[in-house]
Amino acid sequence: MQPIEGLVNALLRPEILALSAYHVQDATGLIKLDAMENPYSWPKEMVDVWLALLRNAEVNRYPDPSANRLRAMLRIANNIPAEAELMLGNGSDELIQIILMGLSGENSVVLAPQPTFVMYRQIAVSLGLHFVGVNLNEEDFSLDMATLRAAIDQHQPKVIFLAYPNNPTGNAFAEEDMVEILRIAPGIVVVDEAYAPFADASFMQKALDFPNLLVMRTLSKLGLAGLRLGFLVGHPAWITQLDKLRLPYNINVLTQHTAEFALSRQLVLDAQVQCIRRDREWLATQLATLPVKLFPSQANFLCFKLQGNNASEVFESLKRSGVLIKNLSSAGGLLHNCLRVTIGTPDENQRFITELTKVLRH
Ligand SMILES: *Cc1c(COP(=O)(O)O)cnc(C)c1O
Image (cartoon, rainbow, N blue to C red):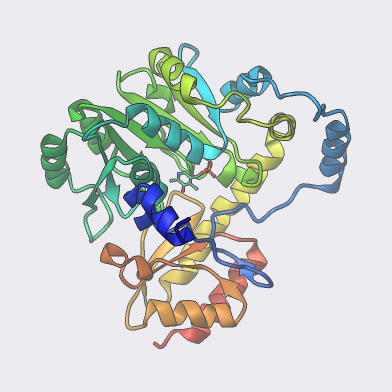
């Protein structure tokens, strides 16, 4: 019997051994403004009705494998084109994995502008796919179309991911650039609309206008991150094939019941979104008075670059004073000296600004 390390190293694929695990910061006791969660809980009356509903959930039975009722409600809530098909995932993370499983293969390339959502690369690499990142323009994080055209031509990617708006930068790319990519891409283009509730732009109504477009959304940023529910919209020809890769009961009974209930109370969620959008503007106004370069955001967070201060030091000082945000600077590259803050409640936002103002050297 070999020592266990030898066995592990001999049996696992080298790309898995080289991966680092997705790291989540410990937020115990801190104001949590690091993970794009909705800071609001539900009114007590709503929690009571929800819990009463869950009493009837049959956890001894398998869930509806196609979650038909939930999918019908999602169609209405998201104004999904009638001819488009949709499939559900255990978070959009699972849908990214399913898409990449379907398109993996010898020499398959996955391409995305960067910096962007790290799971595109993480999942691609875990499946043995080659990931190509193309830098955004440093000035405003817009798409560098000249470099993208050349990279698409050179690598012929099977999948391109466009987070719209982009995480962690917050901006939505120019629509004409997105359309050009859809036209020139030899493979699928996934438009990831995780931040749709906070954005003014969307490709959902164009879901059938391109043979290679898939539109992905999630309930996580809307306020249901704990449920793990994402969905993918596109031509039935694509979704029917990809659906074969979905594990039959990927959306559990409690998630199905809870999501149906939450969607039946959409007005509560919408009101929370309106507060977050309003407070995003308040926070932006406050940040604009500080020595930072603030990037415009259509998401529920703000990304900013420190001027004359060190991002890692500021991040640590904020944490010591009880406020947890995200240090993007450690990723390096275009994110050098950048921080990201999720919009919290008005009190949390005020506390963040107060502490940040104290910490920054003017
Ligand atoms: C948060 C996020 C996701 C992940 O969503 P889940 O549904 O929680 O897995 C996907 N894409 C982007 C761009 C995100 O920021």
